[in-house]
Length: 355
Image (cartoon, rainbow, N blue to C red; front, side):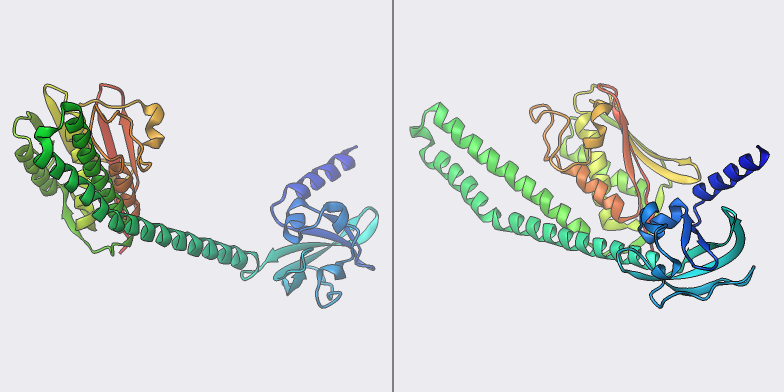
């Protein structure tokens, strides 16, 4: 009974091992057993593999068997699909089912599966880059080619209002005004699409960027644009990061601009820009006490043209956070948000650009 328990334990270890292992008969080379890792390596089913002899796995015929604990033998191996790879095989004598056998441990050498995986990854990356370039070209073309027609729509709508406004009733004037406004909104969307495309093409120029000074400048610009707004800015000093200054300025424009916009209906708006150390990493944040949003939809925040608020509540293109996410991704970081309806929002981000 003890012997059966021991054999069962050995078999369980054999099957569970991540190391590909085969057992073959010493005299004939017939394969007697293979663990799951070996089946994955060679691409056979268990019954298929154990119906073969060892020579079927070697493109050059039956290998010379090892002896005892000698160094691994390097030799070619062949999978079921016919592909050949280099492997190191180590042989161990044992008794299996009452007969002499070899336990063979196999290590696929670099240049085999790893090389194929690397090639597949490289091919996928190339396909992704090609698709991204095609998308960027499309965005640029759409943005460029539609500008002239939109200018014409807007210009002629205004011209009709200016020249014939007195002859038109109120409803007709309203229609023309809406046409002009829609053309202006579409122009804004095209600008955003163009910026989205340019983010991916921009060459990074890394330098020390002072986020504190940048935030101060943005806050002054926003206050100048809407002097009637009463907003308290709390900007921490000494916020610096190695980053691309131009992209980072666009990022801060978007995040602080959103905080400004979504706090516009709060009597005493507060916007805070700072940083915190989390797990040895510097995390920057932009926080407001504005409208907030339901975290149930947080995963859609950074999708292009996706909005969590109606257009009649807050204006916007629905592209800003998508651009922010891409700017941060270009610089090796990540961005996430925390919020609740009517309780403001906090956007946190990291930047780790490669030199």
